[in-house]
Length: 216
Image (cartoon, rainbow, N blue to C red; front, side):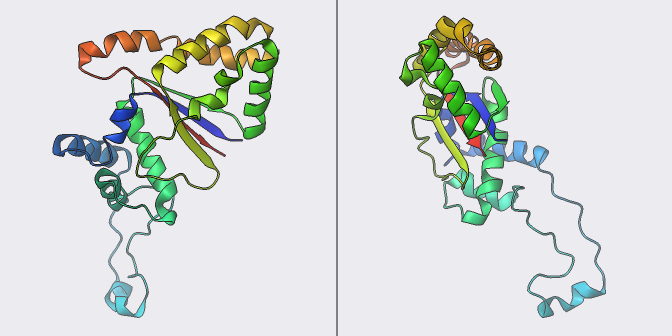
């Protein structure tokens, strides 16, 4: 099964991560340090003294491909190129920052077949095609982090999100029971967008858009 993550956050706030100013970078480093604490220092033994014989010094920590570290943090904060082997870790890192910065987030377990079946049912029930679930990823994020194999990412403007919610509200009673349950849960979350949009100016933030990340 695949995983779908939705974040209520202005796209400009996401793009500002890549090239963050000093204050924002410090806050993001603190989030990463809290969520991805490095493993304990390895025991130093006899093998550590013959490091030149090994490609990697014995006892040194191994970089996990799915777990971000300090190098990944600095790459994203400065907008530098991310090598293919660090894409998974970098997206994990970005999602942790989105969790911390977004107004709210939503997660669902959906594979590609389930998304297509839901979109077909929405269309059958009368929802316009441009409000398919896949439309939430219709715009490129425009960030210095390309997607890894088996994933997709994009965003929708807040106005599109509100219009999609209205379209789904109008047809939810005509959906198949399984899809009706899925959409009802999502609609409850989307129903908070108007509240976040009203609150944004009071907090000197831009109104939220919807950022979507899907991984197989």
